[in-house]
Image (cartoon, rainbow, N blue to C red; front, side, top):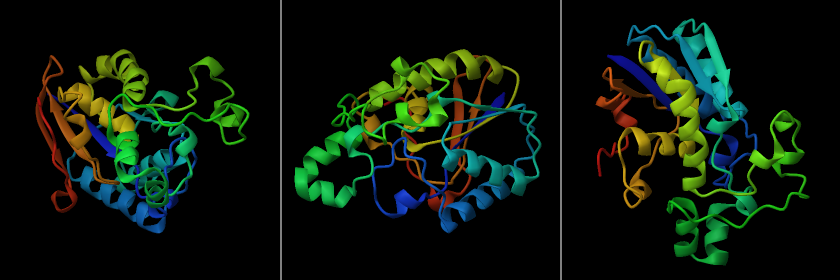
Amino acid sequence: MTSLILIRHGQSQWNLENRFTGWYDAELTELGQKEAKKAGELIQKLNLNFAYAFTSFQKRAINTLNILLKESKINVPTIVKAWQLNERHYGGLQGLNKSETEQKHGKEQVMIWRRSYDTRPPLLDRSDPNHPVNNDIYKSIDPNFIPDGESLKDTYNRSVPYFDKEIAPKLLKDNILISAHGNSLRALCKKLFNISDAMIIKLEIPTGNPMQITLNSSLEVMKAEYLDSTRAKEIILNQ
């Protein structure tokens, strides 16, 4: 048996402001930092050793990982940053307030953009200075791989193949920690928990609350639970 710990970054400034964050590099709030510290305390109590930790290119996930590792006093020999674990790119919605966007486009349309599996948001023009192709963080990545906007299905199609190739083989013998984002983690959970396209809309992942997934030698899920039961959301399995 091995353990996979998934953690969504702690609350970010744009989470607090109720904005579509996407690939914008938002900072953690004071609460987000506290959530990361609490996550470290909870992970430390598991008494597990981790050979690898994976995170995205975005500092809210990177900083969450750094804080929880410092708090837990766990030494992880190899830390890998992968853009494939970035948050879903919200395209032209990025930066907009969700409530104001509901007023403009209607609650139903915004919910489709936020939670449907295969509907993309309005795309962001590549000439926009906020497009990630214009961000130095992504200069090492082929621009053809950088999206203008993504559905959850698009996020699945970049994060899950990366997981299958780079992470799953390591899980056969080692415990692994992933600090990432709400939608990249929803994509991974869709695969791991065998969640249907219709049911994935119901899956929510709270900020800063580690989920421990116990896997057998075939990488089948034996058990999954949030370490902080007071802030847990429903875990959907085989639906």
